[in-house]
Image (tube, rainbow, N blue to C red; front, side):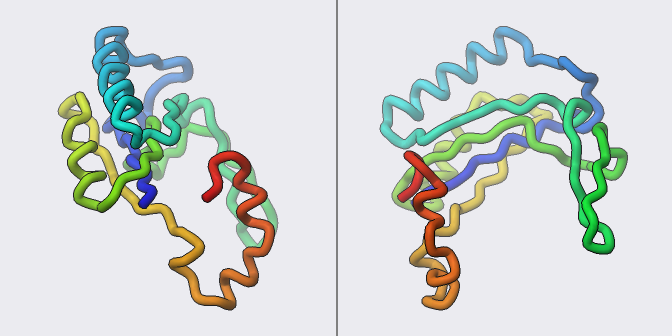
Length: 138
């Protein structure tokens, strides 16, 4: 079962462009990342620049509208993510609990939808999806 663990750092929604974590926090997180890798559950992981460096494309009235960050209405934003492959939701939660997160960080755990989760007509509509996923596809 694949799960995304989404890091939600409080206050990151207003972080200035170029905001970076402290070296000691990164060092602690790297130890955690290595533990995930050594356990054979890590698929991939990435950190994200603050929303002030991003953009959103909405589709008001069916037309794309670009809004540059930061996004005033955002209360929680992603700071990064891990994709892990574990046997259960409980195992994903156990890994999240081991994260050296600070008191202003939350990890949201979401199971990835697998093709077998969908009814036959939806699976048929996704013809070619696995090829689009490339090396990470299942």
